[in-house]
Image (cartoon, rainbow, N blue to C red; front, side, top):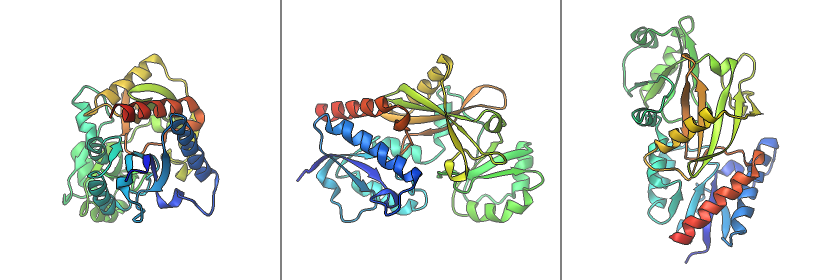
Length: 301
């Protein structure tokens, strides 16, 4: 028997946390903003961890992915949950989009639709080359490597010809278990930062600028990264909207991370449509707009 129109999806750490810091409070506040906006449309809403085995997922019409930020650490369990739960309820974004976006090979797909992406070389699981050999193959002196399924800078390393040898052991371990990706290091990550564009139903709502702390290259706040207001140009907005339009189907919500690459051109760093941080606290109207589109989706179903 249906009890809810929609479940907002989180993970165990952020579901009724015992200790609340500023980071977690932002998560709770933004979920509350969206909940209020959905309830104002007459929808019944609850919030659950995706790994809550006691919850009957058939009691909700829709599941909205919000902060499932442990899925890449529990990937086998998450994939099983995805397959099972997709049979009894409807995901937002859709199950097809989620499966597509889980693996960063999607960069190749949007590139084939004339969206510029950061230069990326994919290395298949089981590859026997050393990192030094890979550097020589692509004639690169500085690069970033990371798994194709990752988040929060998981196993993300900045390498150059001086330190590549000391990372061979971890690379051997990783490549024996999963595909990896190899990208020339992009200098603008340090000098300009990473622009993050929020889109609701394919249309731009707001943007932020993510910057790494001095001496690091990772923009995530886990590593000291900072968040700044950002007013994008019309060209940048169009670029982000075109990237969203290049997905297999238009995502109801998305975050497009964009940089100026080493040639000075706009390029997609990441296209996040599984569980992107949307920074509603910087634009509450975006939460209301997402709620409106979800209401329309449910109404028309």
